[in-house]
Amino acid sequence: MFKILNFLIIRLISFIPKPIIKIFANQYVAGTTLKEVLQISKYLNQNKLLVTIDILGEHTKSTNECDRITNNYIKILKNINKNKINANISIKPSHIGTDINNDLFLANLNKIINQASKYKNFVRIDMEDSNLTDISINAYKKSYKKELGIVLQAYLYRTENDIKNLSKNNNIRLCKGIYNEDKNIAIKDPNKINQNYLKLLEIAFKKGIYVAIATHDKSLIHKSLELINTMNLDNSKFEFQMLYGVPMNDTIKFLLKNEYKVRIYLPFGPSWYDYSIRRIKENPNISLYVIKNIFIKIKEAL
Ligand code: FDA
Image (cartoon, rainbow, N blue to C red; front, side):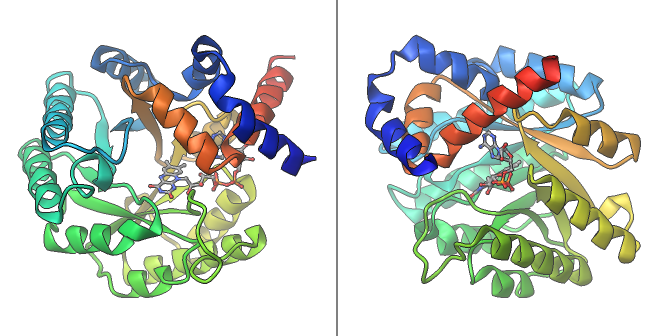
């Protein structure tokens, strides 16, 4: 049934009128302008939630465009500081230069990190598909400052070694991984991905690495909490992260009540349409999530 639905979604997505896609995208995208994303950030802060802001887009094809996006990230950092918002930023390497060359990517990344350091803020390098894993990890190590963190994906076999090669001061976001990777390099079985996630989390904690536990999988969140309790870790060693719009109200309430930190990933920007379509085509699970979440929301409202 899901396979048929996936097939239909991939075939039909380009024919669905933009305004209809926007209705669905609106739930997951925090507006198209800086003003909108800052407003939503303030609102989330008022509700005790931390924020990480991401400009939607990837695989930028011109140097000028990479420079423009870099300057927009710098503008976001300035505005976060000016408005005293509790937010940091998340960046995709291919959005600021890797499709052109590594030097451009590193130069742009460093401009952004320097601005973040100035404001004592923080930059997270998002992890894209496996063609960019080495480039991203190398950039993280080369440009390392305490204001910089990276994402690692529990579905990749290599991640255990990548974590073992990090040290105490490092800061990772651990997620399952969203891209459709080859079975030679990535675990495919969802249960095994979860087992690996917990194994990696324990390795990272034992090394003293700060971990942003990024998942909406409730059983994984609870197993992570069990590990945190067993290891007697305090709040300064981890936070939870979730994507904007995914209906996680009960879990968020529970985490906040127990004084855990929760950060919401806020993607925004004018590229919402191309980005949404490309990501749905790459990974039809996203559209299945959207459909499932509509039912969860209806249930919550009843
Ligand atoms: P799982 O796939 O089991 O999902 C649990 C439930 O959550 C689903 O059934 C659905 O209801 C809901 N859900 C999950 N993802 C959803 C989505 N996109 N839209 C709507 N509902 C959704 N990946 C990556 O490769 N590189 C990265 O840099 C990041 N960054 C990142 C940041 C943050 C804050 C989060 C939460 C996730 C990421 N990811 C990511 C995505 C991550 O790798 C993973 O693909 C998704 O979070 C889905 O996996 P879950 O752990 O949520 O579990």
